[in-house]
Length: 190
Length: 229
View (cartoon, each protein chain N blue to C red):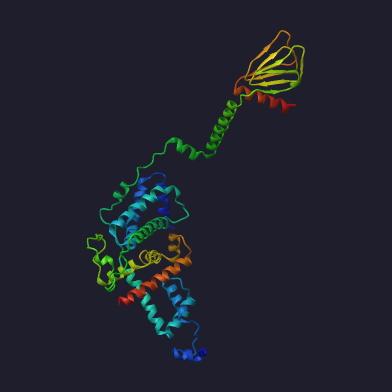
């Protein structure tokens, strides 16, 4: 339990804006990382960060002290990302592989004005392939895998964030890992 | 057509172990189970006993060894994607600026939050008073209570004719009372007037109530005197 964060959340709830600013400071990079990995789009990730804090801020009086603050904010951030993925899937699919060109998807055909975040260093060819494999993960495995590997959460923590039973999370992480294994194997990375 | 004969090969336990190069070792797990354990292990959820079993299986099974190595590598690849920091223009100040201004809660919001019980009591009283007053205003029909055999009603006027005697109390609501005869008790007039002729005889007292509060007072007095009895 991180008592500092819970305390900050309580202070913020009582109208202490400086306490809230500290929470923003603590979490903006983490949520950005989460959103960027989930969505692979700098602008959208930025929007998710802003929206996450807006929701946290307006729902502070509904924050339940029994929940870790980090769990709560990750839950809000993850849900926002999942919503965006669903909307995206509903409108078009860039993830669909281009027929007759090996492994390429529509992202690779986009003019590369996609703003790369400053923090994202030039990726090696291998990392680029891994990134693409993560992007291609079905959305239910995606959040579990990203929280597990890029936010170093235990299955228990992920279950709390996603608000689902540990057994479900376990299955999702397992399947996600197998999915990636197969994909990277096809890309002859394994 | 003759159904094809199906041969089921039953591999004796010993031979199976030998085939895997582990003569005499316990061969309990099949690869499916082993894969489940691998994932548990990778998620840090495998207990000691499970870990030993998995190891034992993998020592005997090259395919599972390979599989495990690959799954481990998937994890390593994922971790090679380093955390991405928020772009420099997305500062804490910028995020804070887009939040709504702190809602200044007015005193009338703060007070009820601090005194929930008192709030409930106040709301209750307001509602009660409101319904009481509205009932008071609605109820403007003539109402009579008492010995009705000896009175005459003309419109909104209740007349006790000369020579008649009303036994007991007479209560009139929302009407005029003209007393020409005798009342063997009290006369109560609520929201109305009364007139006494020279021939009128009232053995009790006359009470005239004209307002809600007075009415309430009257009712309470009545209750108290009833209880006192």
